[in-house]
Length: 463
Image (cartoon, rainbow, N blue to C red; front, side, top):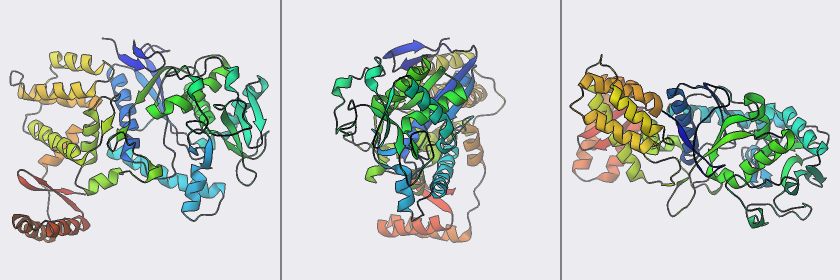
């Protein structure tokens, strides 16, 4: 059965037809490693991981690249402000050197990889660092300059969008609506307000180039790394919806201008996770939660994955702890159902077909979860077969159900000190002394255990 994906480039669902039969090349815009990733950022990687898993479920051999931006991304996505990495170097009191910048990037890359592991996100085949691919950036910029698409002003080299008639075709962006001071930088030297940076001059810090010492632009980095590791064109490019207007249209313009072929055939974009009333979660405003902060509140990382799968990737989500706790409890019930079912069953063909049809309709994860629950509760299907079918389809959902079942089946050894605190906390809650209850939760956490309250009482997990 056909896999259908919503292509932002055409504005409609299309059957996926790969460039090479049986293979799929996927490039996902990766993190700028100047701070911890927040849970809104991580929605993009659960989405791209789900895409990869669905492609593999359909028999494709996937080559996935997620880049690491450790230089060149300015505080405004529209090429203005300070470089985010130099800002991080200054924030952390390190010397303003390329080596210090790389150290900061390495630290936050490691924390990002830990988040991916906690969310059961498959490691991509390639995770190139922008700072390791500057030569490739320079090579493309030279081509653009020789073809008349680039011009130099006092602060760097820019791409002239007026020379590329198709600019803005992704998402049908009207160039006339890109006003200075909004999504484009105010710069009187630029020929057009939406012209974007290819090479940013910085005589004090950066790499040597034909145009002077400085940094590659954020947009050229993705064009260079996707081409290097996947070729051009490749099959699928993913990212957040905030990338459509500038970053991804800029990638398309410079890549197609340089090489006269498309950059990617399918463009998929996930919506934001908002804090409510359309307020985007953002590190710049310090209004964000990390994955670790959820764990500290007794929410497992896989429960957060389940929470995200409960909404279609193209649907904006309004974050709430109440909904997240609901997902946590729902996942726990799912695991409890499966844990008591016998092993050794076979995959039910009818449910496998139905769930595949659902997930192949533009990665419809909420409907797939609903069908999974239909399966689990369907007493007409042998219990062992229900378990086998659920675990088989978990290859797509990535909930790591087999491991969760093992964890639930294995008894937790609770040290006497933790048991004593749990008893005291149970008494405090019964007496409605909730402040004391919270204090005891923190003491338990210091001993390496998380406690959460359920309808059946306190549940303890090893952190």
